[in-house]
Image 1: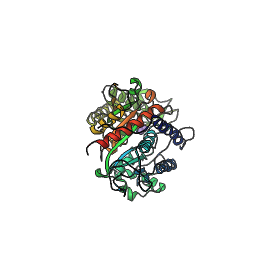
Image 2: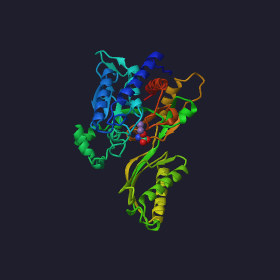
Image 3: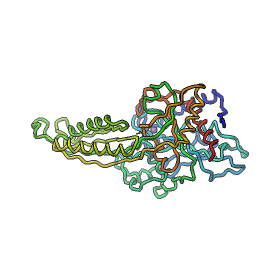
Length: 436
Ligand code: HGY
Ligand code: MN
Ligand code: MN
């Protein structure tokens, strides 16, 4: 059965221009003038939720901020004159929170493209409302904390929706020592009602996310869109290296236990071990030195480790190898090291049915006779890692020139956004045409 999106190229181009303009508007909601930073449960989080809710209501969606601060819009199913508010929903979404000094499109473009797909697919209803044209509702989710910038643990918003929240997280603290529980209360949320955000498998038809690739493959291939095969499983650690602070002038080298040099060797060892693997990526993104004076041999160093892999087992074996190497390094230098895990999310394999409909959607944007669209393993993490616990996950990647992301130079073209909107809408039509 061929399904075709009933939208002119101009309608789709207009939708893409709207997405780009709204990315600029959202970029201006930041806690750090001159750069983009929006973290969980902040005034900036509240402001972008209000903006997203306004755009959702303009489309005829009902809106609510869920118990974890995710902003949700819903277009009821076309099951008859009376909307069926219990119909399962196809969830389309991404996140509106950012890393520090972020780009404009990571997460953001996926939420806004979801709204444009709703605009293109919705149908008028008798009570001059709008409906999903399918026997399922369509929901758009603006997740509130995919990055984990404030509390270190990522995917907090989408974990709440997936029903996998862990009450140990309430004790997580931000850089000011504010606990997650306190931040919830300050934001106007009730920690005791967090469970209300959770969805059951029967509530959802599936989850689709459009996202910039955050890597160079599509740019190198000269292609706009790709199907995502799976999302890397991630673990994050905070390590402490302990040596001895001493006088930078009077202390001979053979008496030193320099924590910074131990941490530096550790970072290089992590790089070397991960580079020797096929699909394992390890990064030290944070390093602090104590006491931190120019004339004191560092007595302590704190460093982060972000470790990802296509397969959780390979990733975990690599972490064991890294730990053994850290033992050896610190032993040679008379240092001690310890560490604790602050985040863990399993690798998620995108559902074959959703990979298929996304592939069909992308094909609909290509000239006849084109090669099949690329299928890419996502080394970047996404909310789909959390949603995989409760429903099928599908992702579509947009070309990200030069692959640069988590950086102000992050880019995406309006033309590729237009192709992505069309492909995503066609994917939904193909999914709806699938026997349920
Ligand atoms: O870290 C990641 O891969 C994602 O951008 N949060
Ligand atoms: Mn990101
Ligand atoms: Mn992202």
